[in-house]
Image (cartoon, rainbow over all chains, first blue to last red; front, side, top):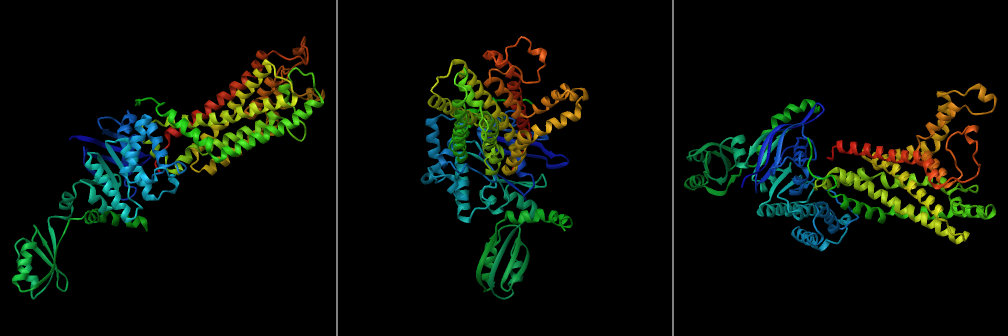
Length: 316
Length: 320
């Protein structure tokens, strides 16, 4: 284990506009790190600076022990990048497209063929390997992009909005592939504004807002930080005077009647057993008992709401 | 900050891929037909003319390139028009095409520098031009053998080889210009239109405009006008201005190389001709010497335009 990417005070200015304003973060080897934030919050610029494709204005980045501005070739050799809108040469086949990349990397012809075949099999594109990419769907192109990273044997995979515009099935497939990558020890950086996906695959996330990281940590940590303490348990049960009885359950701090026979309990721990017992003791019939997992969506909404309100007058 | 690693990394891969793309593309088919048809059209006129007039010309083969019979211009004149079109056709979408296909950021995320992409694309374009022009050159030589039945001499071959090389360099100027425009403009259509606009300006309008500008800068002297002669200063300015157009440089270089009797490309005073046997051909080396400044000018223009394109490309943001 160890850190593979470190950024200190990373800044990018275009003229007077600051796109990335002094961010600090570190990514550990083998972890899946989510860059999260609205469009234009500096995620892609940060990624391009990590690859040495854009010059930074201030600060420092270290990728796999190297400075991407000073030795971009060795950084790019070990890092795979899937741009947000990936393009391939439509007149070439999938194999030819990957072969071009392999030649740019300087991989010999015998190894090239083997690596390409393996990579295409991994992303389940083997049967269309000899078809021209012009006939590929959006989802297939994204998978081909991932095949390129696999073929490169990249130690870090940087995926910029990989699932935007994909249908739910393709998205699920793609997320599975990302998980497979992680299983092989590849460090994955995933940028997205689709929260549930980030939550499904990422170990840690960084929330970007106008060029700054406003929050960073695992989803559970963020939930505690942003949403405050607590579990939210929903109880659906028929019975008399349940609200008062549920409030008496140890650990419950508040009870709210959402609808007839539906109560929302806020508690400092998982109070489902106690709530169930309370309903049964009250001779009520318990229909549903559920606990709300802390969702990134709620964190995100809470985090960006004030900012959105501030920006409202500008938009009008 | 100095960067590490070779700028040539991946150059070979880029050249091979671009060359394969160029040679298999539809525009290459068009170029090929254009070349074959022009070669035939120009030679048809020239060969007819040659049969009628000169049978004992020592440079019969070279005449093929320069003789014209109305309404067709000479082969060299046609090439002066055609080569820029070919080069613009090959170069107008080199960089912005990658950008629009969204392949640019993916390719540049591979372990190569932008230098390799730029240089590779230029070399591939130049190689494509060279292949086409060499084909045309061989076609002309072959047809000349067939129709005239006179085998070409060593000096003729040498002179026509110089013609071929200068034609490729001339193509390089326009290729570099088209690439510069393809870096500057994000839309290939805009780049192509601007390139064609510059081409029209330099080949059609500039020859008409340069005398006018010259006479403004250096007004003609009344004493020369009274004698019906052009004023030397005006003439010099006119020539200098006209030489800003690569088309003019190409024409002059070709004149010197393909017409061995050419003794100078500018105005000549009577006293400079003392002792000269008019109409006698110059040796190959001397002809080359006359054309040398023009050839160097073309090479310099190519390098300058390429460097400009390179600098603009290096500073460009590649993100979509």
